[in-house]
Length: 85
Image (cartoon, rainbow, N blue to C red):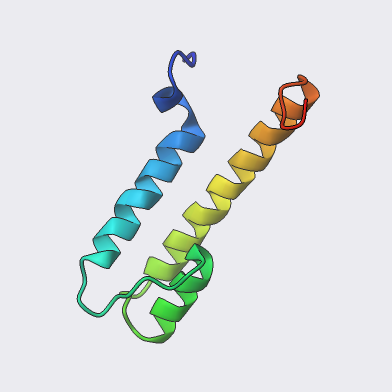
């Protein structure tokens, strides 16, 4: 499958999923925004705002997105399209 628009990018799709899931968390009365996202997962889990397994799934998704973004950035840098060029 080719990439014809940004919505076709796997990293965009994963980030959208993460955004949707965080949005669902914010609807819970016990959940409050906690600064940096990954830290927020740990805080929310420690305060029992998450159901069992949610922190692990959210953290895994967060790490997956970060990995995709690092690879994408490296590709852009190699191709001469990175920041500062």
